[in-house]
Length: 302
Image 1 (cartoon, rainbow, N blue to C red):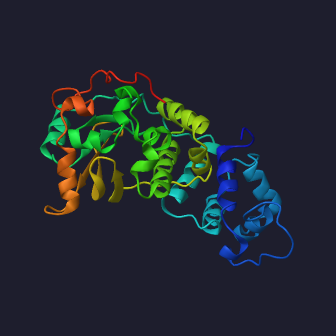
Image 2 (cartoon, rainbow, N blue to C red; image 1 turned 60 degrees about the horizontal axis):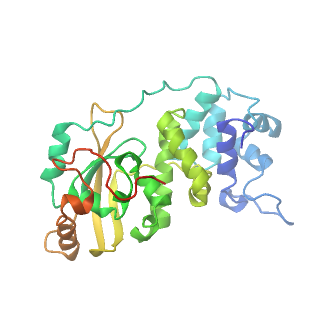
Image 3 (tube, one colour; image 1 turned 180 degrees about the horizontal axis):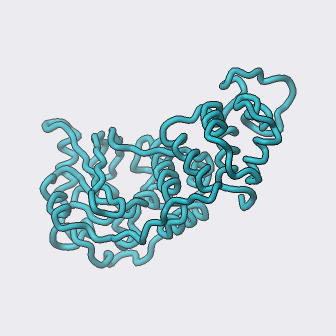
């Protein structure tokens, strides 16, 4: 994985996910030594020589023309965030890296903390650009059962999903949720690949979670602004909640996530049950969701 450039690794990963028949080519006879499109097949589709494409993939050609980049994106069937990622990596390969962001603040504004309490019994929380859990109301914290086993500085929702014993059990469609979570970190990496907090988290997950490593190497880029999540909560049972994600202005990428369910439904009843926990039960510090010392149980993170 140390060979070549990030652009080359991205191109190899994306062509590895396409079959010849996906792009209108014949699969041919015989056993293919590697999955996906061969270099010569992608080069033909993009209208460039095999030698030129190989130089791009191996990092020997750092400034492909906009027409070539567009042709590669179209040939690889890229769109949305994935296509945007291709252009970001081309800029990086050409020596035009995006400006580095400072270390993000973990302070959540008081007005946002008040909002978290206002929406109860709806679960709500604030996460950083890398999904660190910065603040939460009681149902929002209790939704992620077992996360209070970790002190506040270790409470990261992607870490929870891949490394906490309850992370896989909580989500009914864990594979899909895990892919979205890894895809979000890929999107963050595309915007600024050298973020210290991102590097630490990804390094830990690559080391400890084979599932995360597999998803990370797919180079899928995904951002979610809302939708539905299905939970299998050990205390309140099955619940399906709609959610929205809102970027908080004047922060280093903090996002407010809120959940909801129609009043009078079993999902809303379950949501209300989540709100019936005391601060001692959730590990949430007293007050309006302020950060505080970790619980007196397990003192270490994953």
